[in-house]
Image 1 (cartoon, rainbow, N blue to C red):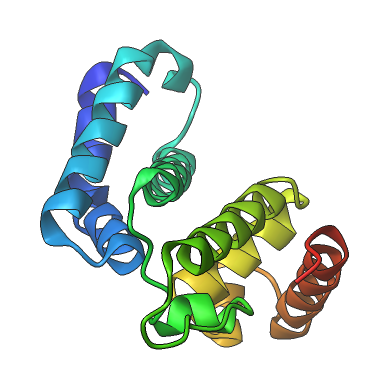
Image 2: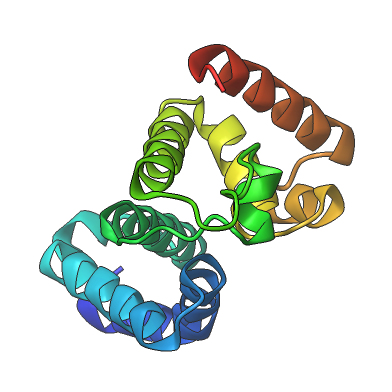
Amino acid sequence: MNADELQQTYLKAAPRLYAIALGMLHEAAAAEDVAQDTFVGIWQRRERFETLNAEAAMAYFAQAVRHQCLNRLRRTAPLSLDDDTHRSAGFNEPAAGANPEELLTGREALDRLYAAVEHLPAKQARAFSLFHFEGLDATQIATQMNETEAYVRLLLSRARQTLKQQIAL
């Protein structure tokens, strides 16, 4: 894939990448920044993509955006634990009037979760992220990953089991 093809592939993927970032960050400006920063990083390393086809490049772009979002979420403060994304991952929202120590404890737990997800086998991490961070259901994930729905459910189960062992909630 030459530089022109890479640019065209990115332009086609940009709305999807923005949607991924917006779904994870819940802030339009931050989502735009992540999508643009990701492309800048990819453009600077464009020679690495010469052997990729458009489909593989789009998958790489999406994964790069997810990682950028996770990094941004780790750095942002204060952390809001009141949305369904964090509850679905096993975190409870802080009590009304939670003190800074309780908020910090919640942030540390979330950081441990993100780090643990990054260490899962690739398919488990992707399935877990798509389900818990992007809100896709097992059928949608199966289609996106080109796997059966039963296999996706198995990946999710194994990912959760591994995460429970790695993170003492």
